[in-house]
Structures are given as structure tokens and as C-alpha cells.
Image 1 (cartoon, rainbow, N blue to C red):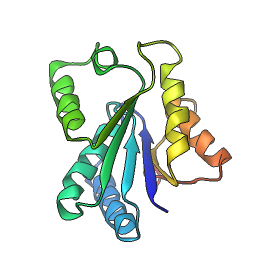
Image 2: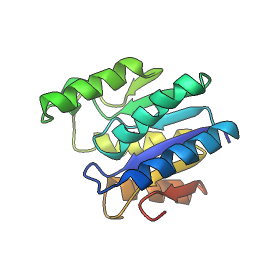
Image 3: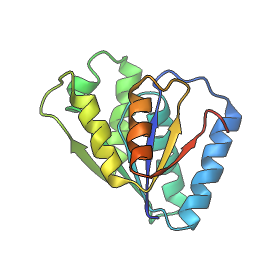
Length: 155
């Protein structure tokens, strides 16, 4: 197992225990050989996980953060606050690679991004409380491929 993907809700309810569990689990899987992490650049869970990988990269320089964006950053962040855009741009600058799925925002670009995420990973680390969502769609795609899923919303 070499790759892991993050998918989760934008508006999440979390506490320090969830973050501690995430860091602990990430350290564990990094030590067991996971070195490439993929995320979709969304607010919420994605950003929490992207920041965790960036921080853990100091301790484990072998790991890489790959972003798979649904559309160009300026379109993806159009309705975001200035603070959210600044944080997104910081993560974008620190990512090891960035792939943009669609040349422009469209109704289907997030679904295409989710499908692309599933192509890459061996393990799905999610935060899902509602399966009728883009996160739920990505988790179902992973499960249909036989990919292991760990849901931090229930651990």
C-alpha cells in the first residue's frame, strides 16, 4: 500500500480527538509505507488533511501531497472568503503536484474529480456523516473497487 486519498465534508463537526486520531493514523500508515497522499482541495476535511500532510512532511520528508482540483483555483474558490483563499493558496504552493480536471467550472467537474481520486489510491481516509453527498459518492466508488475506507467521523 503506497497511496491514500482524503475525502470529506466541507462543513464538519470535529474536536481535537478527531485531529489526534488523524495524525496518529497518518504516522502509522506512513511508517508502513504510504508515501503519496491525494486530496481534492476542498474546504473542511480536505484542508485539515492537506495541512496534516504538510506538517508531517517535516518529520517524514518522503511523503508527498498531490492535489486533484475539479477546476482552476480561481473558479473553485470564487465564493470563498479572503481567509479561505489565502489558506488554499498556501496549500497549493506547498503541494508536490497539482492536477486540474476541467478547464472551467461545470456541474460535473466535482464528480470527475472524485472519479479521478479513486484511480490513485489504495486507502480512503474520509470524514463522512452523510452518504448522500460528494463524499459519499467518492466512498462508494472506492468501496466498489475494493479499496479500504476509514471514516474518522465514527472512530
